[in-house]
Length: 105
Image (cartoon, rainbow, N blue to C red):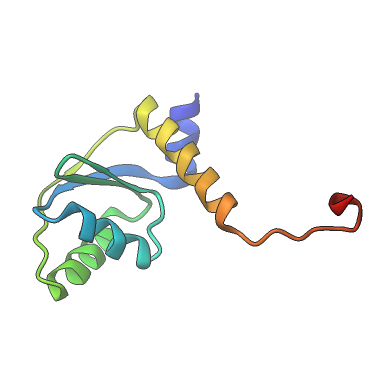
């Protein structure tokens, strides 16, 4: 049920190989694809529009001379559900917090 819910909300995982995963993840996230993670030399992100997302990522990486090959669409796994929950929490933790008078006491 959690896998189906994630797929409905965020799409299916799209994977690709790259020789520069650290650089690639930063560029992908700068493009607004926040549900992305590095797995060894693979980058994996949830794609709601796989063809458009692949073209966008390929273009951004090519502009920085970063390779992207062996693209694969995958099924959502429980690991994806776990990673997505961690990434969502990191996003929440980075948002500015508003404090009321009561919370400062």
